[in-house]
Image 1 (cartoon, rainbow, N blue to C red):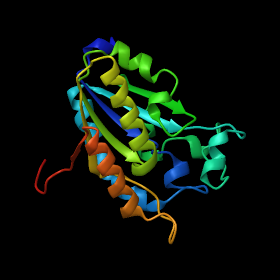
Image 2 (cartoon, rainbow, N blue to C red):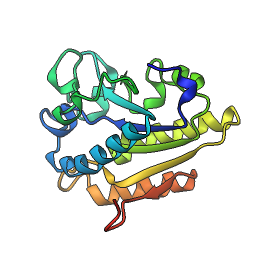
Image 3 (cartoon, one colour):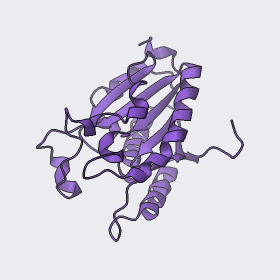
Length: 201
């Protein structure tokens, strides 16, 4: 990893792990439609030699968070559920890439994340993609923005609506309803909602 001070931008890819996309009690294959745009952004960041951060949900068997999601054990440490989906694995250990494991719904709390942001003090732009829009993204983004406010660091945060998604449980968890609520909260806090325009390279 280069000196973190060289980076001006950071792409944060939240919880694109098998346990939310491909297998397990909280997985929803609909989230796969975001992968194409996420890959485009990864390639853009690689070309610009800017920082890419993968956030990975990772729990012990007795993690208390399980109880808040129907007591469903998910993304257990050492299992395939806690690994990045295959499309992203080759990017995980490259020079301008970092990975952080979290045991909660806010990536700001992942061990080492804030310390990294302190070292990467010249980053002023963040692009956010991944899942779930109404849980780990909204919690992580708002918490991170509050941290930057606290230390008087001006940043721009962009949430890519064509590259984030959440799960759906018919009759219980409505995908659109919860994502719309997440956008309201994110925009209220100053995050910008963006998406790729048709015909845009």
